[in-house]
Structures are given as structure tokens and as C-alpha cells.
Length: 144
Image (cartoon, rainbow, N blue to C red):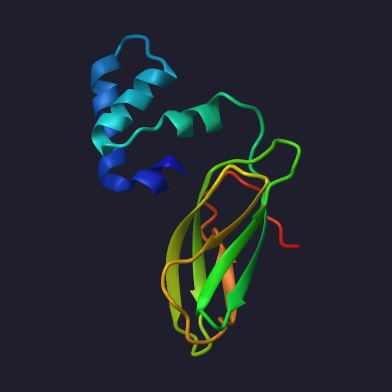
């Protein structure tokens, strides 16, 4: 999941740095976090706190809406499961009415209920939306 979020270059650069610094020694998950933060230029504190230091996994119920007036498609997320709400970088593949596809990423907030608009405008109601099509999230996604 983190590899997908950071991309090949930053992820493997961070792993090599982490390995070089701690080869034949002891290391902690914070050492790994710091190496990956340096390689990616991003803070990963929330990611590590959410996925390493708390129990459970995400169980979002995901749906979508289309507003013809504004041409907006939004993801409707409910995270009221047994482990609470997680912040999720959600990949969405939109299949449009002409069968063209758009691959987008939206940030679902760690809130029990959220409606997140997709970037861009849609002239027509899409045929379908696929959530996390590559199964990169540690999540059990359901549809209402």
C-alpha cells in the first residue's frame, strides 16, 4: 500500500537508504518511516500511526452520486465499522457513457461520513465507478 502511494522511485530509494543505515544492526519502524520520508519528501507520521499503531483495518461502504447540473461525480463514503474511520487514498476508475475511462485518486478523510467530489467535470452520468481496482488498500470495501 505504501509502495503504491509513494511510487517506485521514492519507495525503493527509501528502502535502500534504510537498509544501508541499519544493515547488521537494530532498527525500528520509526527508522523506516524517517528513511521513507526523506526519500519521498512527505510526512508519513499519519500513515504509520494509522496502519501500524492502531488495530484493525478500513471497512468503508462506498457509493457515488452524479449531479447533472454541475457535471460533478462524488464518492460517498461511510466508515462506521468496528475499527472506526481511516484516511484512504482511494483510486477510482470511472467508465464514462462512451466507454472511455478515467483513473483518479481522491483522499477519503478519516470521518464516519464524507462526500468527496472527483476532480474534473462529467458531461454525462458515468456507466460505472470501480473503487480500489488494483486492491492496494488494506480494506474491506462494500457497496450499500
